[in-house]
Length: 506
Ligand code: NAD
Image (cartoon, rainbow, N blue to C red):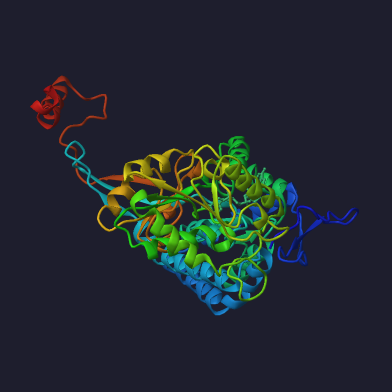
């Protein structure tokens, strides 16, 4: 969808100002949504707090039932949600559906695994505290604020929303101003399932509404978006010492070793770089190919890319650029690369139109050009030959980002993956980690911190509660003013036996 910013039809004099979301393929108005004020955001958080009392005190099983019902509702109405996403983002309907499919699987996983991951678990008490029965459990924080981007308006926020809900929190969600309809759809269907209770609410609006959520009484804020906004979010959250998760941008590479299946590697690079018009946080932006197979790889990818094009017709596999302001950035990166000496294999400067950018493949792109150093977020690939996998890893890691990536190799794929400084890597496939609900999702460096998905993603929306229960009299009474010299000697002997061995005398 896209929209709004240039036409924020803040209706003068009207009770509630509104903004429009626009279809990026043609500029049509898709929907009109309220700009939620600070007071209204605070009121939503207050309602959520009450709802959290009910939701957080349900059993894991009861929450699982509600979440699985929601999952089924989304599944049965998948075409409807994909339509809204298609209109608001411009992405092809089938891409919109694929994103929802992944989100559905995550909702189900979070619902089914919350008890096992977060429920009370026994912990060994150790010799010193052998008389204690120890447990840890993970309690909901209360109300979680979620701020989302537009590029994957279902999958991305659901990584926070579903996991926060499964952990027993209420959620207030501020969707991107480009995709408010998708956010509203998600909240409306969940609200239907919980019979109108405000467990999951949406507050639509622009950056100010997001800021209002950051400074509200939420107990944690999960942000997904650009690093620049992430910094503002952290600063705003600091006013109340509200903890944050930041899922920000990336400049992921795909590495191709000399023994890789080149047809598959080319297929992966092409899709991961250009699908969703390249507007993918975990998309491939750079490709490093072993020089021994560089020419063959280029022949493969050029052949596979020859019929690929961006357009709004049903046959076009690539949609428009959702956010108009991104067009200029994409063009500037292509121009900078060419000015610094890159070869144009496909597309180039002229590929950048008013709403669509045609697939662009550049090679021998200087490492100091913005096409290599900055997130482009467009359907472009920078493909460079490397002398060795050491060089591929070194160049891959020479970025301030560290979100994800891919490696294509027969023998050393996993070894190379381990050396890449990023939160997630797929070997001989692309973005597979995002579809494995049990795996954590998140980055390092300027790609952010904190994790969604998997057990880490559930714990992210909780606090750990440790409990010890004295089950018998202690051997030595240590926590008492009645402790005597004899006990002090005993404890000193014991600690020496336990930890005073030769190992420490190296
Ligand atoms: P953005 O930073 O422009 O906006 C993200 C959200 O923040 C929107 O809802 C926006 O309204 C809100 N916002 C804007 N100003 C704010 C403020 N001052 N306080 C609070 N909220 C504010 O990002 P975008 O253009 O929507 O998304 C694209 C970016 O998101 C890319 O950098 C992409 O890589 C990143 N992204 C990251 C992930 C991930 O999981 N790491 C996933 C998807 C997208």
